[in-house]
Image 1: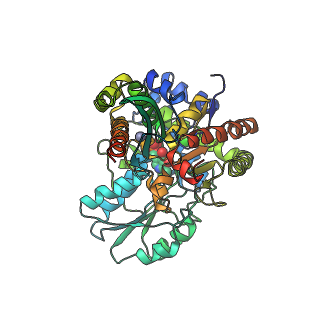
Image 2: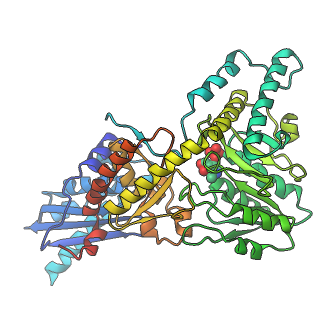
Length: 123
Length: 392
Ligand SMILES: Cc1ncc(COP(=O)(O)O)c(C=O)c1O
Ligand SMILES: [Zn+2]
């Protein structure tokens, strides 16, 4: 059902955990639907220097969280905002059609975390 | 991956070798059409009669009350639609429960669209349907009551004799989906006032794609598959002969080995339940604590999601199943877990491990060694668990 890439990220997820005093935190999804994703960002000079995640969800949700953190690490905030769900799914060599809705959360969580960072910065 | 432990016997079982050996000659040697007059047909017809006798005997029915089908779903469809269409002039109300298998639920929903009225009864926290609720739901136009014998997800066994007794008093047909019960529970349709009963061979070590419906003599039921006059005109189509031979042998063996098998499987089940409840915090056992199928365990592990649990178990060679939305392909978690009152987030974290003849104590010990670590690892990744621990 899942590609080797998905299973790789699912079985050894990258960047799991929390960042204390993170510059931006984004949490999306809800337990009702079965997927929640939380992303922590450390940002220096508009560059994402560290990223961690925690996810409650299925194999697709965990794998997309993991690969999304890899995709934005080292990128500027502006570049990270351009990450799309489509790009995330492509870099996992695809997902079964009924799993696409689980993957949207990664893009949303990244955006929410950056929004949180920008809000904090503006204060 | 060396270890392979199958704990999904409620989904399906392998076909027993003895059953298979009895089936094999019916593919090549005895291939005649049972409807044919020549000896090729006659010899096969005779063997079908033996299979029919065996199925009938296992549930206390008469051979002429057994109709072979292509599985549990078809048996459920035939019972419900067959009675509904045949008794339309008497009434259009059907009573069933919220925890039935989709083969019953969706058949009833289809009948609703066609103008029938269906009451879907609630169950209690253990998944038990109350006979009183059945009694109270009966109306003048009720023609059929259908309540499953034992639930396929949480294993809860229903008070079938009591409910059938009520239906009998009120002269309403009573059907039970016994797909999960055959081989695990002793059933006598006459003593228990059951009018119709569905079964599927692949749940008791027989082949897939063959089942049977028992229909008490005198029940008004029409065919839903039209064509030839096979199965006394209630199920058209040339018989799945090897399958029918298989279900006959499988049900005979299931009840020959009944005491020995079920005592052992119950012991393993209880060891598994006890071990998991002791070793894994924030866990609940779903289904009735005592009144459950000997081979069924079903748990909810809070703060984690079922599919990721299944995938992790699979990587360790353990095959189970889950009622989470993501493992079912729908957006909703299992209707059964919701019906017993679990909130969505907990229902997403369910795991069913269903035992069978092949499982050993070592299998259970292995699960008890592997599962707590997996649950803990997933919880460490879960943003919900963080909150429980009050942040570290
Ligand atoms: C309770 C119950 N009813 C009906 C069915 C459907 O049986 P089949 O898959 O043989 O059509 C199943 C099998 O999953 C079941 O568990
Ligand atoms: Zn999902």
